[in-house]
Length: 294
Ligand SMILES: NC(=O)c1ccc[n+]([C@@H]2O[C@H](COP(=O)([O-])OP(=O)(O)OC[C@H]3O[C@@H](n4cnc5c(N)ncnc54)[C@H](OP(=O)(O)O)[C@@H]3O)[C@@H](O)[C@H]2O)c1
Image (cartoon, rainbow, N blue to C red; front, side, top):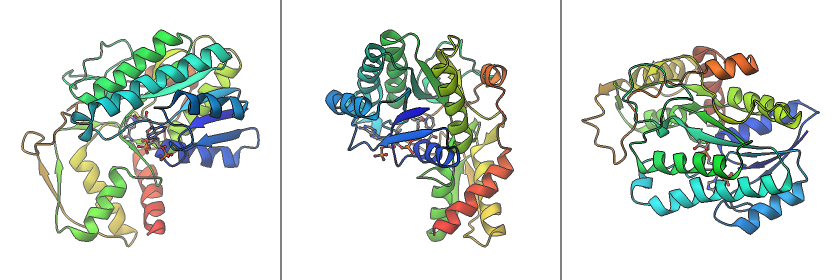
């Protein structure tokens, strides 16, 4: 299976490369944002056509949640218009297409788990840009699939774990919110799920279209996650700093984040039979990778 992947250095992109490197049945052709820019339709078409793929996966995105409040036009260009153009090109080329989105399409005001059937109501410019991308992909190419992920972490690229370890090297205390809860999801699990979906789509399975939540069933409070990261880092001989919990209201970040980012993965588990790496094990591997990187 030849997979053309927009994104090379991001977390999911690197996790896909690691899975593909271990599986001889997969040829992964990746493009960085400079090579296939979601703001440049011609570069996307050039990359996809040259890759001669069986399936296209878009891991590329504008992921600066706070900056999107002021760089809103740029966020919409990369997160909404780019995916629209890519979806259209895949449809007209007869190529299955998998896109990615986020828990931030929801406000987080719901008490329980969000399902794929819940109406989105984003509370940030980033969330609105990602929702516009989901809708653009669905409009252009109803057979495409959008995988929503949340709280992604791994030994690859920058994420909450790498940031906490990096801050602990220089800061005496880590101030982390204690009222946001979400599903910390290991990027290699997401990569494995995307490849499963890609295989189904290449085989022509019609039920792999629309939305699917690819998230762990774990639910962790942000400050507890920070404590777990620090404990694991110290256990492995890495930096440590105590965590000072505080409320989101007192943090005054530019963008509003969902207090409840918990998504139901029931659909993904039922259709793909996915097994997610338990949080403690995924964290152990992530911290080991981050510390080895230095
Ligand atoms: N990280 C999270 O916690 C999280 C949470 C919810 C949803 N998501 C979604 O999951 C997907 C994957 O995110 P991630 O965390 O793996 O990404 P990431 O680590 O933040 O990396 C961003 C990726 O986007 C690419 N990119 C940036 N600007 C681009 C442009 N103009 N054209 C093409 N590509 C561009 C980057 O390209 P290079 O390879 O050149 O660096 C990189 O591969 C995204 O749709 C994101 O919105 C992520």
